[in-house]
Length: 300
Image (cartoon, rainbow, N blue to C red; front, side, top):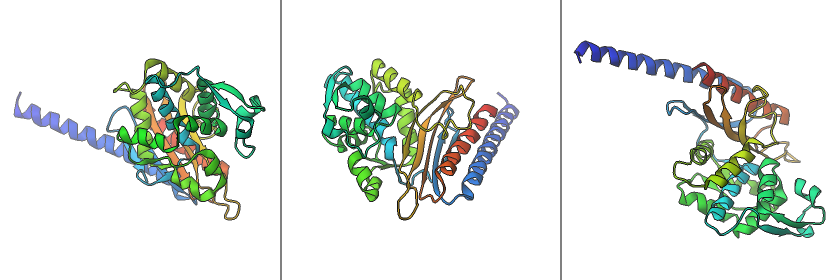
């Protein structure tokens, strides 16, 4: 190979890298434009299938997860299933006294007197419908919320904390900040369990959780808000509501994997916090960022 050929290859490589950097910087500027006029703190992490397609804004900042933590809870339960400690068809008793009226719970509507409910149904309600009663039933099964944190810490996820359940979190505004993660760590959890290179889940558990994530019913105006209707998005939402006295929203979140029509996908986590905007405006922030990422990956 001649020196000229080597030089030409190097030039092409540099031009390619510069082109990539310019496109990614254009996406960053778009997202910063979306965020800049909003009275909110926004964290974003975006990763494409190419490792160069990486962007984050406030990516290492701690954000309260709210119901986003139900995805890691489900993964922890499925790890116990794969170890043989639990089974998906195993019935769990949920007493009427545990159907707390202050908690969001489609399960309570289905089982107003409580009942013996299978783990797979509880997981589906907890993840796809963000059921709080189901969430706390799963945490009781694990012994304590910290079991989720320990499971992920053992896998190397250290920017992640789970200290309390939904009952405690919904009963005290300030305590929600004990369950936190960063946008970059949320993306890493999504990507690790979707790629599943280390066989963290059995095929049955893998198919089960990702089918549920793709069928999530909450957050229609967030990540998928401005995307084509037929787009598949495997995602989990979280929401704190507004503080009664200050009017501040601590969390409007959505993390997920967006599947492109060309067969590729990208991972995206958006956390909106400390916001004095309306819920509609907060959700639009997420939808606008997701659409900007969608356009970038389709055009690159």
